[in-house]
Image (cartoon, rainbow, N blue to C red; front, side, top):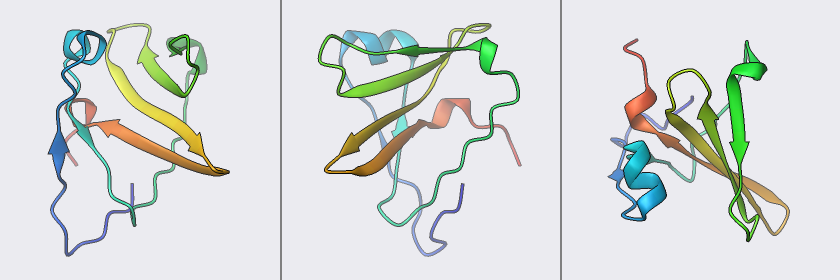
Length: 88
């Protein structure tokens, strides 16, 4: 993830039952760039609610909800579950 250095990540917690059960605390930034490289795609589950407005990506092994992607007016956006970050 490429994050603008002048800004500290803002963390937000969704209070819906789905996100709460997954322990998700999200971070995003309008100027950040997120590239995701998936080594073992068979270990992930893509989940969508009935509205199909967003795709939640869940680890099949540990159950962690890792990130959410959506497309709005032809632009892709994502939020990342900060609880899934590894120490750098």
